[in-house]
Image: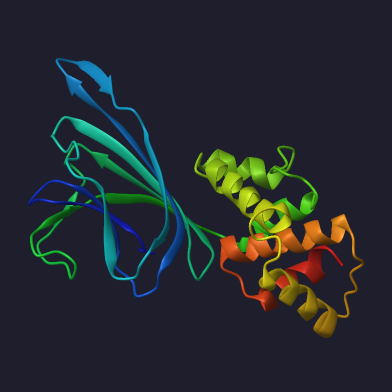
Length: 235
């Protein structure tokens, strides 16, 4: 299932991340690294790690103006992001220029491009992320003893900054700049009105509501979706 594409336009040899679909993608984490070989000596490049809040539909981002594309270079690319379907992990691999595909026509480019081969695609259910958080709803960081968390980290190191930012976002709703956010109290009112959940005025209740609000923000969940997860795991 093709969503994002890593491409190199042959006009200027920049590295671009393309979203060819109509839907926007959110909270993108991007990493790539590689090496070159000169006179049988391998030269490793420092890994590049970046993050952006959104990549609009039918658009692309230039990640690097002059990407090392020579025939003696090998690169690994991966990206983690939130889509309408869930959290997506994609990996790509360029073995010199042996496995790139030349596209002479593309709706977003006026000149030919090299498309880098996708080697891995996985759609992660938001429920997995929520189960990690709800394992210890009062924790300030991801629980390292969670088997789901360890499994995700083993699939990609990009989950480390993803969870760091998630817990930062949840903290903003608790004691940060979003602590008086209307959306937190709207969610509480929904739970009380539609699911008969009663909250007492306490630090614990505020932490629970703050974490749910941070999860909704990060995973792009509606209040109704988050309420269903709340009832399933916390009530």
